[in-house]
Length: 271
Ligand code: OGA
Ligand code: FE
Image (cartoon, rainbow, N blue to C red):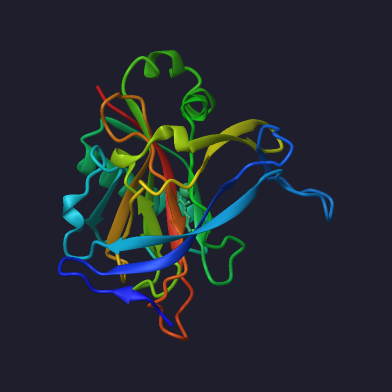
């Protein structure tokens, strides 16, 4: 049975989120993202499921902001819908993403370094494990990789990594995204994981369960809505790194349409 509790303020769904389960032999965790021979394990650590209450913030989503909570919902419509055309995404969708981030954050410069499409016929599915995309080291490394000539100068000032996440079809009926309150997050719960690409090694954060963590989502997110997810901020005293995970929503209809979304990863610079 679906477990949905109506409280006076906001409904809460009870679901399972997967958290970090360390390697049994105490070794440093890694994750391999290039193609390996059939049967070779791609990581040396596991997941541990916990039951978590995820609060639906529909109607009060504007109470949450990038610097206080590490995520922010806004409304914005993009004309673009040619999602099967990668070049068109870069030349026609990216500029609107840059505008959206500048308008929302007041940033001076935004550099897009990557995007991921999650579609019903595509190769990428919702991610069912709580994670933070970057570590402090990998965030700085992204700047050295993507802005090599200006990196030293850029690293002296405030910078952020923000993912711009949007449904392609809506309203989202299954596997919505749960976002942790980074303002309420003990960063000791984030574990560095080596993220091995073929050509270089980055780092991501896996998250240990802690009952103090608070998770939120926006139910029925539509194509004119967007969420900014802060993955890193060099500034102290603000929300720095936001854990997130897709989850099985007990209120999803039986024949729910697959969730389709795009997340665009960006480096964000200030004066
Ligand atoms: C992200 C992310 C997972 C998903 O945008 O960084 O982890 O299921 N997305 O959309
Ligand atoms: Fe992520």
